[in-house]
Length: 311
Image (cartoon, rainbow, N blue to C red; front, side):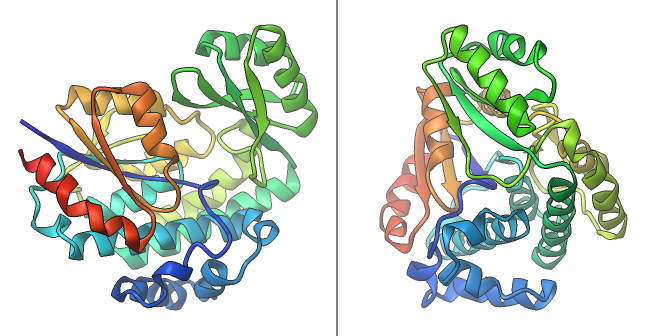
């Protein structure tokens, strides 16, 4: 029997003017609500900001979250609301906050405030301990760990898909680990458009600031399973600790996709800017059905995908 999961992208998925196709859609009202809750001009980030502006952590996180929420609302009004409930949801790093909103563990306003606080905390940590990230293609996880092991200031960060790993650390550390990865046979090492060394010990100072915001947040037991980044396991509560740990822990995305398959998921719907997660699904669970909604045009094919997910 077909089983659906929803996936939400994180920082790095943002693009200049990614909100332009959505500005006249009814789901755009989510942007206005997020702006009111956070005191930020979210519409300007989605409509006018250039790539350099969006690279700043405090901007990219809020922008990616806002557009993902817009696509979630648009998908619900275009048939998702009437389809069988997803078996589970998952979000990549920042996307975990949208996943928690979709699962009913957070309301949209509470999630927006947490995302804003997270972005500010990580921006401050990045300013204090500058760093970067790079994607390493073509190595096994053990080889990536080996490449980082002999380098000061580099750590394995995101296990995204078979042959696709991300390392994090200082600029010098990531450069050295990248060269070590090439020596071990990496097909490619690519710098990522991020403003810090996320999911590494360099984010430790952000962890304390985020914990303050998490203590003020009100979480509900989620209505469906949320597969967490830090342990690739399904959860319905315990998010204060899980989200705090996430800041300094590797994202176990490949393992999360495998766990979703173990939970019976056959259909994966990515909601938010870009289609990177759909590509990771293809490389990790290639016998699955995939679709993504990044623009209003994608809604045209959503109904057919949802019908296939019903069986």
